[in-house]
Image (cartoon, rainbow, N blue to C red; front, side, top):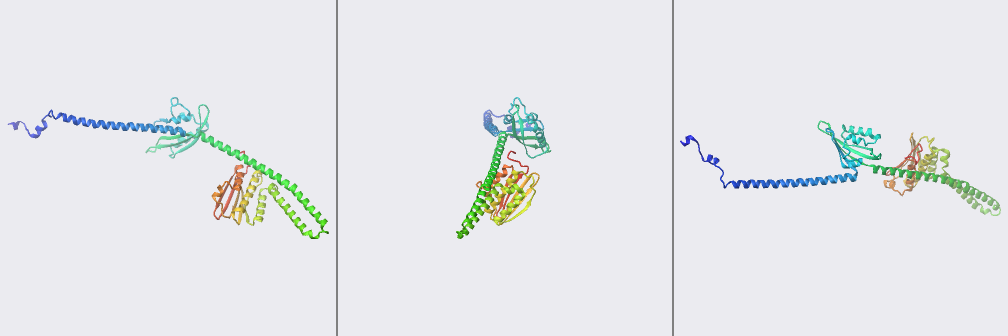
Length: 410
């Protein structure tokens, strides 16, 4: 009957039996043990978080110090929300207080110099469609009126739909660099003026020496030759055997007169004064051909009318020195000259077929010839370039402004 009323089995009996009092402590011990493990894991995680926070604070401090030392601030614009963030160094560059000046694009643009405002604003909005990193240098006008120079570098980030979402950039204070560059330019300008003045004084001194050689020494040599004539006439009958000696003395005096005239002409640039630059170059090249025996060719000789004297003198002196270098060092058999002119520049090119100057020789500051040529060019805001190829020759190219820009020009 019992089975008809209900069903009982060992399994159901075991499932329905309550936990015995002596088994309850063992369950609590397991829970306590699990809780201890969880608490240990939590302490480990919290320790790692504290370590990460300390490391993050350290990296933040390093970043702030690095920005301060490099004078590089950082900024960020969330284009979708309009939120703008400036670093502490960015505020220092603006010399502004974070509490008094909330970061915004408009707030920054108020610091941009009025003359730079338009193109700086355009550069940023152009970056919203251009992906490459943007770099601009411009001026800031601080609240007290002082001017700073800054360099901005930034890039705009885009989402998958090709929409601009964020701009991230840096701002570096380059005022010290700009001032150093300005001082370098001023120093170069002073040196150019000094070299130009020295060249001017040297040319004037050369003219003075030339006049003295021609007028004084030349006249004295002529008088000496006349006295030899008189002496020879007086002794001709009594000492006929002296005639060869007198002939040799006359020849010596004639050679001295010719040498004095040659030196006087080189010092005074008489050909340049009387013939002009183009004709003087032709005469100089013919004289060089006669003395050196090298084949000389003028490949181009543009009109040099109305060239300022200071430019013509520099070109002629540089040509003289370049030809001297060819005869002494090039081992060439031929030299070509070209003089090219346009509305702004006059270019002299001297090309030989010699051994070819080396880069080390070009850079050697002990080469007085090259140094003097370069100084003459730079004194007139010009440029000299010397190149060489082994066994193919050397090219000296000098370019000067035809306006006669002197050392007073920046």
